Image 1 (cartoon, rainbow, N blue to C red):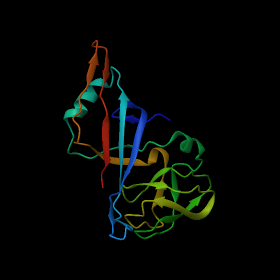
Image 2 (cartoon, helix red, strand yellow):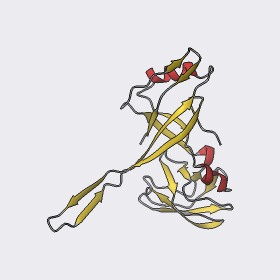
Image 3 (tube, one colour):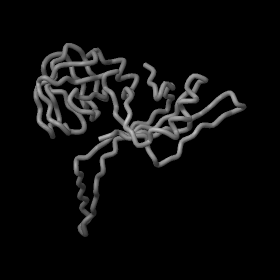
Image 4 (cartoon, rainbow, N blue to C red):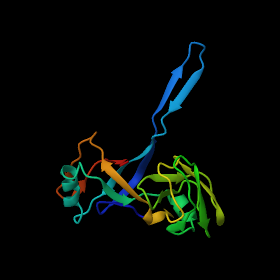
Length: 193
């Protein structure tokens, strides 16, 4: 499946990073202690294939909308996406914030590494173990930020929509080669929490 950013095809390599700050301390007895606050966000970095139809959007995207959150389908790993037979929306049971799994009412297969979201909030999660048909827990990372109820659904595939901000760490523009080809450079997105 091809994925798009502002109408332009996302090219490989696509880098998906889990940013979860972890603090580490080494004691005088050389023991290592680590702690995390449980905060996590996904960060994406990629280039796009620009065409005559999308190059104007690429340059406009570099100068406008930097303060506004936008959305796109969360890219899935090709092997994971090919293995899934679950469909795009499934019923779930209630789970409280902080839970590391949610009971899923499923009649298909969902592979570990699948990016999912829940219908009641914008956070993207990753499935951490294969899940087969039936009503059973599906393990997710990170833990639930918001409680879910039996009226909410788990969304996969094209329904797993990432809400993001463009990173302001690098300036973006567009490069022309012989006035024919263009390249928007590396695009960095940060999940909006």
